[in-house]
Amino acid sequence: MTELAKKRPEFRNINAFKDLTTYRMAPAAWVSILHRASGMIMFLLLPFILWMFDNSVSSEFSFAKFKAIFNVGVGFAPGWLFKLLALALIWSYLHHFTAGLRHLWMDVSHEAVNKEFGKTSAIATLAISIALTLVLGAKLFGLY
Image (cartoon, rainbow, N blue to C red; front, side, top):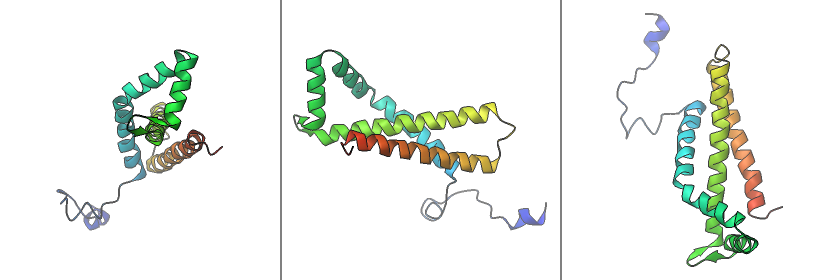
């Protein structure tokens, strides 16, 4: 064993009350967790996706009703709630897509994958998905 290996702390069991507050995950870990969460969000909101698609392409009347629901709301649910659901779908799709491209790139060029590439590509994935979500969210909420 080298001298460096002896100095590193060794964590065998993580205490949820003591260690989790000080544990700092790498950006690649965040991308991995969010990749799974975004896939779950898209799966759980699949009925909402199908409802949006059906109402937007059925007829001109259903499309007008569809647009009105996003502005006014329906029943007890206000319009901003539907916009937030759509924004969650936008983020989950964009993050899942960019993280998927990151994984495909790592599979194709496995010789170039190292710790530094993992960190920079994870940060780029987070930045791209958040930036595109902000742009499309601004359009969704009528800022431009």
